[in-house]
Length: 397
Image (cartoon, rainbow, N blue to C red):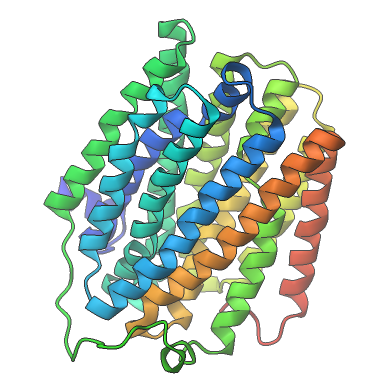
């Protein structure tokens, strides 16, 4: 089994493949819930689109803030796996809170605690992948993890569709089933993830001190700034689900939108990552931004289910062309002893941008309408493309 997986990953370290499986299982669990959560909030608990935007933005921002500290701790202690295990463990333990929720406040609490778990694991996990992967293969490594993560992201909604049909649209039943793969992910960490031996003295001062932060050079901060602008253009995928609901797709079929998007994401992330190792990162990022502009324009004009699905495909390929590559660039730019901190700061900025983007999207949706939300996204995407084009030195290899 391990040999076959290694062959399929074209010689990438086994730890990368194991972490890919962990991401796949946890994302399957999360997306079984999240693919239904916006509709559950609106149709069952009576929330507004603005409330959905605020909840999603706060959730991702919470994860991003937590990543700064967990990444720095992993640099300070030079131990990544314990934080990865804690982060996934917290996320698994919060999954039962969703089916037990009877109000918006309970959902917010469950979502925030779940995202704290994501924040604790995110930067140490990405730093661990960078630690165990040769520089010339990092695009492929991060692309593989993103692809496997995204396999979970379409398996989860697919399971949600089937379970909703079997249970007569019983949201809470689906949420309970989602607990199972979450705990399976924790088991894989315990059994299959190994931390590499480290040489040299352990850093005794916090990596967040000024004398440490200045080691992150201008090229790194250009990447962070560029990613922040791009994230402003890419609000929560919850609005794709609300768009599908708005054109008349039934509640039990709403997760199909995420399935379509994530199939496109999973199919494209690893090829784009491998290509970036050979061809460079900058041009592929530009392609990704053009795809996001196209997705926004299609979704703004959508009047039927087929057009929404086309927009979801374009959105997914955009994700495949940008997310893993941005992680690889951060790994390329960060010193080895500050990788956890570098990923944490990167995610802090992008998480804050996602909060602002999701709140803005929710406000526009409520005040003006769905088309304005996606047209604004297209305009912000164009700004990110301009920033990528004119930046010197380039924010990518």
